[in-house]
Image 1 (cartoon, each protein chain N blue to C red):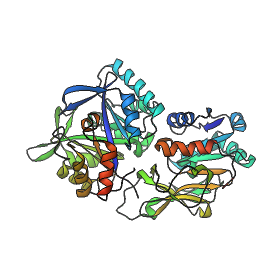
Image 2 (image 1 turned 90 degrees about the vertical axis):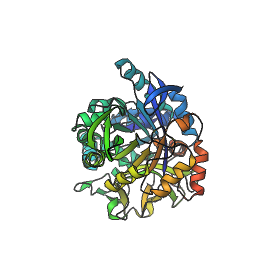
Image 3 (image 1 turned 180 degrees about the horizontal axis):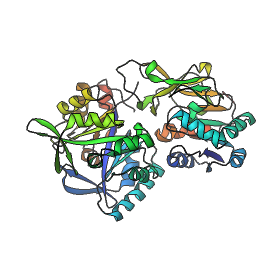
Image 4 (image 1 turned 135 degrees about the vertical axis):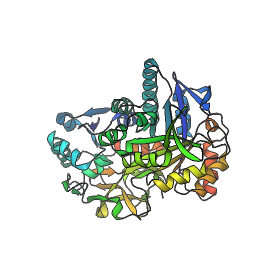
Length: 252
Length: 207
């Protein structure tokens, strides 16, 4: 039986892993290569790297780090951040990424997802959506959650999937960094709208939040988190053991 | 030397590094002469079957793989590379495969329940159907990483392992010195590396 995936997310800036709480106030955590090896060793099912560097210099540093990770860590690697063109896909795929996640790039350029899916296949293209409630509606935000696009989120995500995105990472800005659980209402709306895998992101504060996530929404395929893993608040082996004890199928 | 066939399909970075990681010497190559000297051959592949089969033919590497298989060189196909080993594919039309292992490539949608997501993506447990040298270090319930929308049907007793996804989907096949994995051993952590290592040390004799 297919297992639910547990995915640590590493935000990388200037070659170091950082994690923003509500996308503001970054704090340095550790080295991407050693963190990736550590997570792979303790049972992470996949790793997501977000390049939050703006400079070209930082970009080069990021691909160098990615290559070093992919040489040693043999689990699926997803890369996001600064993906605006098919050439950007090419750049990270050549360095060992398996999937590429697009966010602001897909908002700016609606042709990006279809072009990338045609060239690399849908399994390679992940739509990562930052979503926040505005006046009771789900809205897509761009630029790392700073800019309201005014677009309704569910129809936007559905359109991305129709255009070729093979997986959805739903990051709720409302619950991100709050540590009181995933945004079940928002996730449920997305799961009802698309038939591709959905990865929950934003809000995990402890082991129980993952149990609640998979128990309440069996259509969710994976749970993603950052700081609770980086700071050791949740150990992945303990998390998976608890999930299994709760009847949720995981890879041990 | 382990040759990884480069025929312009997909990204060979992870596969070459994973084979290096298990201690083997690797050559990523599209040169039929190097394939002739290879001790073992890996046939990777992602994307559409028709496109990949055409590229193999155009480069003459289809012949090189068949010749190597006939000489007794251990050959392993991975993902689309496994599907290419079969007789025929029904992905967007009908395309001939290499015919090294009996079977046909068909959409998983034909056999799985409608509420299952396609592609079959993620970590799934291997259900071993019979012992084989490439699985010497694999334990019942070990998980490997899959990404596919088509599967090997009618592979008969060539099936080494299946993965349960609303139906038992072919996960690995073997016949004589030729074998294939639908999953990605290069992305399947320690279990995947153990399979690659076992393949690199395999003499090509089935069970």
